Image (cartoon, helix red, strand yellow):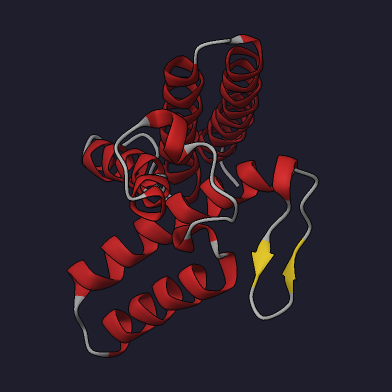
Length: 170
C-alpha cells in the first residue's frame, strides 16, 4: 500500500471517529435540554431537532461518501425524515396541541420498529430489484432516519417489535 493510500484510510478513520463522537455529543446535549426544560414545546422542539441532527449524521456515516458535496442533500433529507417520524404523535392525538401529542396512552404507529423498518427495507429491496434507483436511495435514507430515531427513543422506552411487544418504563 502506498503512503497516499494509508493517508486516505487514516483520514477516513479520523473522520468517522469524529462524526461518531459528534453524534454522541448531539444526542447527549439534546437529551440534556429535553430533560431540563419545563416547557412542553421546548422539550418537543429539542427532542425533534436532536432526532433530525442524529439522523443527518448517521447518513453521513453510512452513505460511504461523507466528503462529497452531492451527499449534503441526502443528509439533509435524512435529517428531515428523522424529524418527520414524530408527526404520528399529532395524528394519534388528533390534535395540534403539543400537550396532547406528548401525552398519549400508547405509542403512535410510526414508532413500531418492526413494521416500519421492514416496510422500508422491502421498499429498498424492490427498488433495487426493479432498477428504480431513486426508490432504492430514498428508502435507504428513510431506513437510516427511522432506525436512528427508534434507537434513540429506545434508550427510554425500548423498541416496539410487533408482534412481540415493547419494553416500557413509562
